[in-house]
Each structure stands twice: as C-alpha cells, then as structure tokens.
Image (cartoon, rainbow, N blue to C red):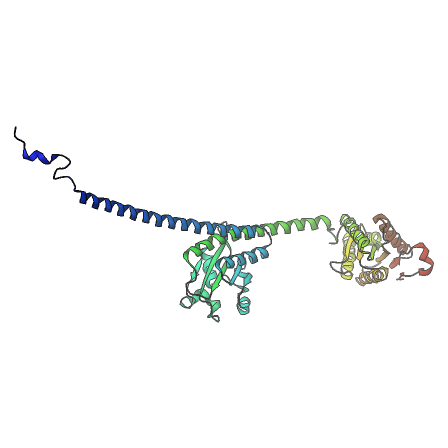
Amino acid sequence: MANNPQQTGAGFGGSDSASPEELMQQLKRARAEIAILELQLREHSEKLEQKVEERTRELEAINRIAATVSRSLNLDVILRQSLAKVLELLELDVGGVFIHDEDRGEMHLKAHQGLPRDIVEKMSVQPAGEGCLSAVVTSGEPVLVQNIEDDPEHAVMLADHPEFKSLVSIPLESKGRVRGAMCILSMEEERFSAEELKLLVAIGSEIGVAIENARLYEKSYIHSKKMEELSITDSLTGLYNRRHFYRRIKEEIARADRQKHPVSLLVVDLDNLKEYNDELGHLKGDEALRGVAQAITACIRQDVDSGYRYGGDEFAVILPYSDEVRASGVAERIRRTYEDFSFPKTSLSIGLTQLRFGESIDDLVNRADSAMYVAKHSGGNRVHIEVPESAADETEGAGEEPA
C-alpha cells in the first residue's frame, strides 16, 4: 500500500516540531524571565524588609517615649522628657510643648529646648487662635510647614528668626480632645518627611494620654490633700486640731532628740470665755476664738511653727528651733496681738516650757499646761515660763508679763 505523503510529519520529528535551536531560544527566554522574576522578588523582599525595619524603628521609638512618659505623673517632667526624646529621635535641637487651657482659650509654653529667649517670652502664654497652634487645636490634625517663608501665617511668632526654615506641629490628643501641641523647628527647608510626620502623630497620642493621666493624678492628689486638711483642721478657727497636734509633737520631739536642737511648747487659754458667751452669746464667743487663732497665725513662722486648737478654749503652739527665750517673745507677741483685737473682758493666759531631751510627750504637755494654769491663777493675761525646780530660785518671776 502506498504511503500517504501527508501523514509523514505527524510524528515528533515532523515539520510542526521545534528545532533544537528554537528550543534553546525558548529556554533562554524562560531563564531570562525567571531571572527578572527573581530580581523583582528580591526587590520586593528588600522593600518589604525595609518597611518592616522602618515600622520596627517607629514602634521602638514610640515605645521608648511611651516608657519615658509613663515613668512619671509629674506633668513638667513628662513634657520636658518627651520633648527631649522627640528631638533626639529627629536629630534636631529646637522645639517646645504647649498645654491647652480650654477655660481661658490659651496655649501655655510648658517645656522648651533651644528656643531663643525672645520667642520663649512671646509664646509663654498666647491665644489658642494664633498661628499653627490654632490649626492644631481646632482640627486635631498636625501642621507641616516645609518652607516658612512661603507660609508665614502659620509661623507668625518666627518673623524675627529667618534662620528657621521649616516646622511641624502635632496635637497631643487623648480621648478625642487636644490637650496640647508639640512644635519642632528646623533650619532646613523640606526637613520633615511623610514617614516622620506619621510617626510624630503616633507619638503625640502617647504624650496626650500621659498628660491626661498626670492631670487626673493631680486632681486626685489635690482632692486627697483637701480631705486630709479637713481631717486635721479645726473647722471654727482654721488651725490644726488636737489629733494632728499629737502627731506633730511626736515628730518634733523625735527630730529634736536626733539633732539636739531646742523645741518649745506654748499652751494658750482664752480667759473668761464662759462669761463672754453668757453676756454676748456664742456667736461672739466664736469670734473671740477665731481672734486667738488669728493672733497665733500672725505671730508664728510659716512652715516652721504650728498652731492648734487643743480643745474648747485652749490652744497649743509648737515652736521648733526655739529656746525658752525666743519662745517667750513669741508668746508675748501673741498675747498683745490678741489684746489689740479688743474682745472685752477676755485675755490670754499662756504657759511656756522647753523640751527636755528624752522626756515623753505627756510630760512636756503637762509641764506647759501647768505653766498655763499658773499664769491663769495669777490673774490671767500673762505668760508664765515653766522652769526646772532646781533653777526656780535663780529664775523666779522670769518670763511673767503682768497685764
């Protein structure tokens, strides 16, 4: 049977099969495509690795600043340290942190580094509606000025300082409210990148939370101090109460025993208070008691000496670093000051004694109390100094001041 010539090329070696040269070309093209894909993959991998590294650095920077600001609840420390960390991160030297006073509509410069003195003076307190700070507070968004000369509206305070070429101002935000702003200055145009701006915004949120925490702590501390003051203060006279007296005298005796410095104690009694109340009423009697407190406060050293309403018509005054000579001068001034207030038929009897090292609180108080009773039973309106019995003959009458 004759062969069909049209069937001859149907096999592998037919005319439709690629030649060895063509196969080599196809292989080369495939290898080139693979090389291109490998190069693209490597470039993509490098870019991805770079992004991961950048993100890692960003997170590390945020964490470092978050750790810094979380170490303290003191607002000044938080602002000062956070500014220093941000400037260190950006490798810059000039910036400031402002706190927003919502009630007054003002921005207060609370921390700064590298700012010229005249700028500090101008920006120490300024309306929240001026310059870049206004935009930050109003919008809650950062303000980036890459060339200050082209955007003077946002840098009105820098008019006299052409050395500054660019700035960025970021909100310090917490719970949807702008607590303040951080402004960073540079002497280069186009200094701040989009990545840095994004990082600064994230850092600003951390600082905003720290500001909020510091304010909450401050409010809590002030409240607790007020409650403490109420618990140790006599409501009528404003002096410390009897409970706080014993706490304080214990501390002063312990300190005096360690340091060997003198401490004197006055016990003050308001003479004839009962008769004064009976004649004029208790409201007038309360005024007289407040008069004693005013006389004591006027005659003692603030933050050194301390006055107390010991109970009823009795008061006490602790005088650290005062011997009986100095204390007698203080006691006499208290007596005369009250006398000048002119509460008729009332006066002060004051007993004075100086601490003997090693004696107990009760012994010291009893000696001062006894001295007060001597003054009272001697006619009142006088100061009596309690002295040891062995020295009584030498100092008899010393310290007594007749009316």
